Image 1 (tube, helix red, strand yellow):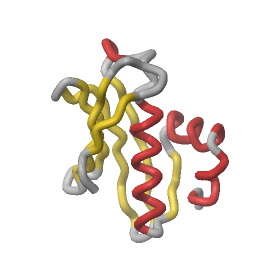
Image 2 (cartoon, one colour; image 1 turned 180 degrees about the horizontal axis):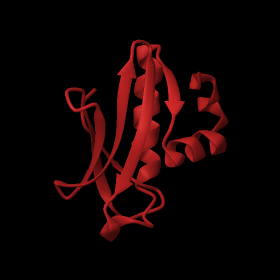
Image 3 (cartoon, helix red, strand yellow; image 1 turned 90 degrees about the horizontal axis):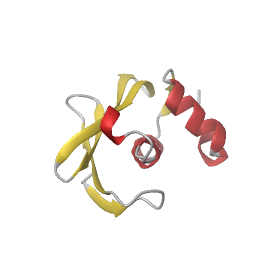
Length: 104
């Protein structure tokens, strides 16, 4: 999965999201600076999303939303199930019913 360049509708920040499979994390960058990530652990066909963080200076800009969406879209493409151990991922799934079928 390559980086994507998009503009968040809730923010004026332009961001890039990349996937580092070796580190098992999705990274969001603003102006070429890493400002957050969503990390997971793979257990066979199950992806345990256990930690999401956005730098304090970038909180309140809704950057976790596209970050989590990208991670869950990748999980779907992989045919994986998701365990939302992270409260941010759990909250995102509860608010976006199109991702509830991934939980398992």
